[in-house]
Length: 397
Ligand code: C5P
Image 1 (cartoon, helix red, strand yellow):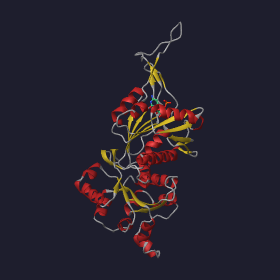
Image 2 (image 1 turned 180 degrees about the horizontal axis):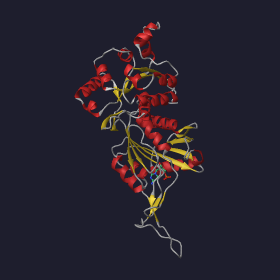
Image 3 (image 1 turned 60 degrees about the vertical axis):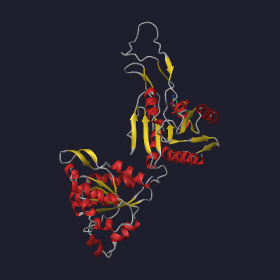
Image 4 (image 1 turned 180 degrees about the vertical axis):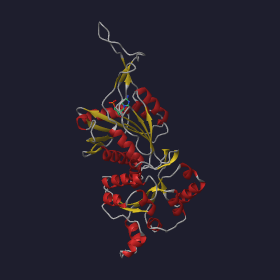
């Protein structure tokens, strides 16, 4: 679990988005975090503290004087000393203004002022409150103090208007927290990846494709973004959301993938080709749907696709190139041959019986030094180990 053992104070302030904080709390505890909720008085008008107490398994802190009367006068200090981070979601315009002034006029503001840990805010407010120079000025002050601002997003608002000020969705906030806790080993590195299958059209409704789910490529893109890299993911057709902080370029065919990659490859530090690119495409795409003919079988002539990875590796100032080799037998022989043929420093081999389509994978890394088998693990973990291996090889160079 990626937030296992993390101690988080979840601050909830008084906005309609407070109901989404309950969903966020559920995600955080589900990911293994130990969450203490603190609410402003206004927040309790939107959602009852009992909901948060039930979901966190702990009493919710709302009132400075109640804690003091309970013989815990130093609650505000004790809480933040034990926390790894404070996340305020939603953070209203008024609460942001109070923080910018360094006020301590309720329990949540007090424990934030007394904190010894990082503070993250997820603003949520009407678009005009967001655009107001006072709000922007307050946020700028907080940013200068090292406070991290997550969002907001743009879209439909509870007031019926449309614009900037929606709180980020709970799933996105959870991703942002995970990224926040990941050591930043790839800052200032540009990582370019391919993922998923390609779709080679035959006519307007038919084509050649494969069963690649994109799971492994998306996991590597996500891990790289969490480690602080600037990540661009050129993705074939898969039903997946782009990972947090990843720029996704959606393509269909190998030729489109090739063009999207070649445009960006010279600028990348690392290129990781995870996509299952179709080896061949139809020589000619029929402009109209092919009809079933009465006599004889139709013939589709195929022509080879460009080898994207080999072309990137052959660039004069090539990025550090990594390939994948899915094999059905003789993994080491085939993977090492592929690595040499494409002239790349590292290839990730896996037997298709053991990884295709699933959430876990069993891979072996092959480089100049030989083979490095990794234990069977979730693809998210394989992704992190792969990036660590890439960094180690790059440092040796
Ligand atoms: O050549 P083969 O498909 O066996 O090699 C697999 C590796 O090469 C993968 O990393 C895949 O993403 C990459 N590849 C590519 N362009 C192709 C075929 C494969 O980038 N046309």
